[in-house]
Length: 262
Image (cartoon, rainbow, N blue to C red; front, side, top):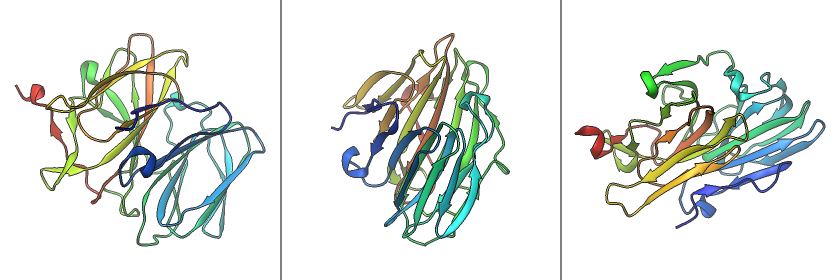
């Protein structure tokens, strides 16, 4: 089984590249670029659709034959403001030139329809509370089921206060049995505040054939090929993560862990 916890392979340039082949699955791709002012990146999308997310900082974007101007406003994800994003369809090309030091996430999945390229956010993205008590967290939905400009991608940001849990109650989406449950592969890109902190993510199946508990640190990525996948933020460390999901159909339906239903 491919390693579930991925450490960044540097602090500048491309620091993550997760492909379906590398992950041992079929749909989700994820890359992360940490750029300095003046750095330039770009690539063709091929048969995949892409959402570029300005995690932090500002960059000038061109995509699908159009200049989209300067995107990005927040300098830290922990400002909890809506992100600036750009959807790029399959069979297109994009470039980004950093106007400040910045972090850009490249979320990808199979694309078929050639939807028009478009800006996503910050307008239309509203920070929303989910859960209560120590299960409270805050969500920026970037491209979830209600948005119909994607073929495959489901993308959201989650902010978990120190001492709280998220992706909780524990749940799984690893069967193609709609409408009961859908098969969705998922990546978690984690950030910590302060950045020297840590959080916990467990990935486990009902039968125990997969059961890993990981101490995640700033800029780590966790792969969720199957099973339940809760996250906990210890006292003193706030947690952010960017979720990318995709599967054979663009619906998010999940099943709770057995212990949650007793």
